[in-house]
Image (cartoon, rainbow, N blue to C red; front, side, top):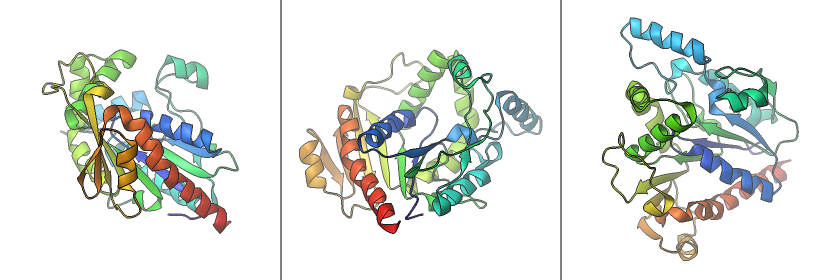
Length: 291
């Protein structure tokens, strides 16, 4: 953790909705005139698309059918930890971009499935913002979580997460349901060992719960809408959280536990604005005073 150079980390699985949360942070940063350095978790994958396929094939040949982006072997977690540590000390570091599709290929002048070159963060940033798979990961070799000042978890109930992933990968990446299902199965051991434990490290978790039948996510034609969902917001520490204010501002919400509030799905963006803005401003004010 750092006083002068705070780090915010948003962690969630593929299809969890971390990109939507990132958009909320972008609006908060723009409104509050906060300059952020950005890290996309995909930038710290170890392999590009072709090399990842080869690495998976090599792992399968040795009997490992669960080699995935969720696990440490497919990622540069030591490098990620070093960047977090460096930014916390000096406000500096570097990142790159993973090119997902043809649209990004035009933007970054690089083929889909490859990485751009490593580049340093722009100078003068107020904080570092990470969004990806491993923003609060702790293993025997690395502890990324200890460097983040505010850790946010985005974790829909598992069937909803699968529905969102299947729909996204079919619509934007041209995959079949069978191919996405194979990916889900291959990643499951790493999901259990490396993704789930991060949500005990996070300061705030946002968990979307559908109120419609999602019992078979592999045949679902539509993603449940916000109005067909509730969101459980769990605080690691309820100290300093004005729950009475939140319940009064978020119509239809209620307390489910001493550290948890349940809100209508359509109120998620408002809830994030109300909850996260004071936390972000507190980090910025603390950094300002330290400087």
